[in-house]
Image (cartoon, rainbow, N blue to C red; front, side, top):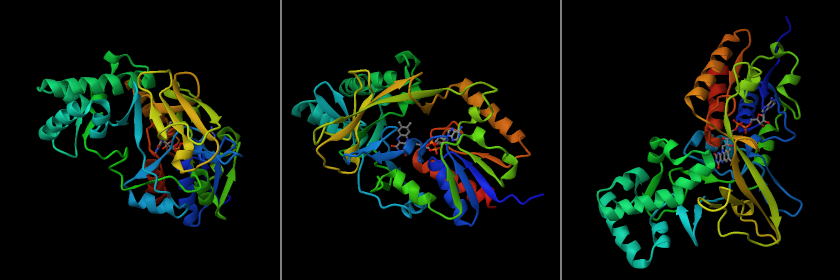
Length: 373
Ligand SMILES: Cc1cc2nc3c(=O)[nH]c(=O)nc-3n(C[C@H](O)[C@H](O)[C@H](O)COP(=O)(O)OP(=O)(O)OC[C@H]3O[C@@H](n4cnc5c(N)ncnc54)[C@H](O)[C@@H]3O)c2cc1C
């Protein structure tokens, strides 16, 4: 029998590219395919002919506490020192999200915000976080009222728009995880040590990762175009697991996103890179990408982002019992493919919410612990 020479990676998103590079680094030959006409998957970005920066699938900010992942990716890019902050337009104010002491000052007049600030600090302590649910249940009527304010003005309608839930269908556990921060630290990813955007964009970083003599890449190539899986040493699928098995057990459900992306002929469109719209308009947020790379230009590109069941690209797995059971059934099916050395990794293949750092970590561990044992 002919020797199997290379590994096949299906999907050139951050999971597939990280796995391919790790394999190449240990001298293994890899063929990586993607059905799209670009690499990078959901993290794909580019510069238009006017020099504006655009992330095609919505805002992506890299953040991690994982030193190994940070050092691995930092071989292929330099990072800028962008620190992400999110604000929500609530009536005429821009309130920092998650709601914190800065938001308190913006939302209320000086006397009221000082009064509430003192109460919050005395009750919960500076630099602590509490869930909205706890605030809403507080025995102090002023704190309770503040909890109700944050729930109604920032959380409720945004969640309904994003997930199409009615308020009584929102799992209290979800609300429980939404924090209010007793802090003036406005960073969104305050718990992650490493953060930034690649200075030349994510796609350039991915290009550099794939630039290795052991890696061959084929774009516009669907997994169905692969004639014989048997001729590869290992197959790493990062494409949707239900699609891999021709949806024979049914389709997994995702919340989709579509973007209305336009250029505006002004230097700055809005006050912050990302502004959430919890209460007004049908869109959930507006992103101005130039702000991620500190680009100052005569024009700028922004996306209005809408959540949908039918339109756009698959974004967030919907974790109902039915979907989780279905995913597990597919995983069992995968295990039965004993003849194939087949691995599923990444947000679509594992039907999981992965941040970029988790996706990269998963890929590195897969190669180090399961393939190159
Ligand atoms: C709106 C949004 C914002 C996000 N923001 C952040 C953020 O700020 N920070 C962060 O850390 N994470 C963020 N994420 C998560 C991030 O997008 C994921 O971590 C990342 O995309 C996972 O990479 P992946 O390679 O697993 O999947 P993907 O990027 O989806 O890559 C999978 C690849 O498989 C290919 N493929 C699919 N089917 C086939 C097929 N049949 N044949 C061949 N190829 C196929 C696809 O074309 C794609 O290129 C965000 C996600 C969303 C939806």
